[in-house]
Image 1 (tube, protein in one colour):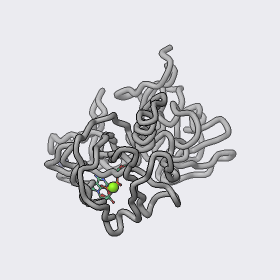
Image 2 (spheres, helix red, strand yellow; image 1 turned 90 degrees about the vertical axis):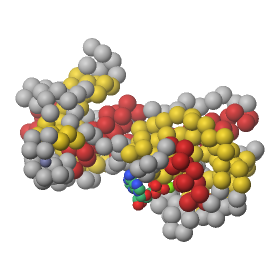
Image 3 (tube, protein in one colour; image 1 turned 135 degrees about the vertical axis):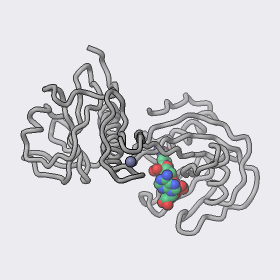
Length: 277
Ligand SMILES: NC(=O)c1ccc[n+]([C@@H]2O[C@H](COP(=O)([O-])OP(=O)(O)OC[C@H]3O[C@@H](n4cnc5c(N)ncnc54)[C@H](O)[C@@H]3O)[C@@H](O)[C@H]2O)c1
Ligand SMILES: [Mg+2]
Ligand SMILES: [Zn+2]
């Protein structure tokens, strides 16, 4: 038995046994034991299954995803969104569900060829869908996004979007556009969102962010000039905060929080935090 969580290319759907998770637009099915169910039991429930995907091994046991057409009722169970699993509970299970969510979303959204409209088929032994007519392959989609902590000595620039929990301020972030390097994207996003210029851009680390398929690339940058002007509609407020007087911050498992905690720790000479995977 190999301990831990390992994703795999594909598993044989006809082989019996293993664990399964069920996903619908309401999130993952959950009972008092968590979101992992004995697969044979789960498949006997009255659920409308769109597709079954083998996704990996947890402590050596195969794990499958049942992607559902609609959230059914299973006695003693409820539905819970992926974000809630990220915020509380076992980080390992959150990784399993995050991967399941990305595979489920991608396969659901690529059932038909984007070029000719024919049904896509599974490629043997590879996580890819294939159009025989066009010889076109589709792989799981990942959207690179930059996230940056801008600092000015003891001050850090944080902003809030109207979508955030009341009071919470975070680092600036945005999706890469075609034609951009990571640094180009970062500079553009910072200009768009707060009209500030940055210098000494340093890559810090990355994080998978399965909401629904971002790959966060985290940076630190120093302030170089400009007055904060928050972008209409996108940024509700943006301010310089002294590291000794910070507002409510993002969830501890986010790279946004890590970038802030890391800078504060270095500034104060405290032990450095660990970037959550
Ligand atoms: N893990 C973290 O700590 C953390 C923190 C902040 C943001 N994020 C994530 O970073 C990502 C980007 O942040 P943002 O929302 O500020 O981006 P953003 O500033 O680029 O603005 C989002 C808008 O950009 C547009 N957009 C452009 N390309 C897109 C694409 N590929 N997918 C979806 N929308 C696209 C859409 O109109 C969307 O509403 C999001 O997924 C967000 O959840 C993660
Ligand atoms: Mg943004
Ligand atoms: Zn096609």
